[in-house]
Image 1 (spheres, rainbow, N blue to C red):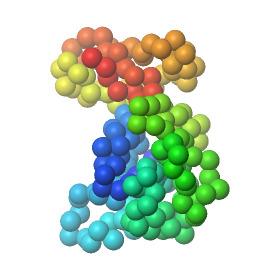
Image 2 (tube, rainbow, N blue to C red; image 1 turned 90 degrees about the vertical axis):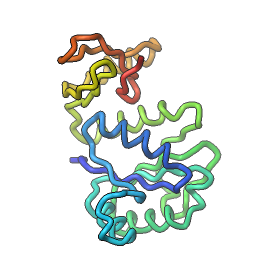
Image 3 (cartoon, rainbow, N blue to C red; image 1 turned 60 degrees about the vertical axis):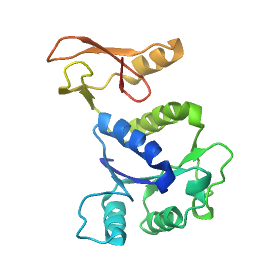
Length: 186
């Protein structure tokens, strides 16, 4: 069962990593990152090794800068060496590093990053059990938990170009959600 995911990225790709972490949070998956700010008593190397060893899945974000980053490539090497499940998120036109060249990546463009996140979540959903969804109400700010929409409902919304809908259990306002990332839309 997948419950913790390590996100590898270069410093320039921090906004992409944060967006991925928010999407994983929405489906109740914990994420670690190489730029993890907690446990400062440990060296960065120890935090990286701990994060990768404790994770069930490793997701490198590979843009031009990320694929050329020595740190990202070292993290990939550690993930391969510890036999992690690796699902690369790769920007169009970027080649996979040699250690993971044989893997099937999820390709994205800067204009359609949310589409790639939707594919990633769908693949994770096929690999593990994702039952719950966390939503922060954009109106009252309360966090709530509910069952995740069935995949068929998500696919219908994607095909129709519409949103998913739910209701805040606190303020009772209707909330529209992006069917790819489950993020509330205003």
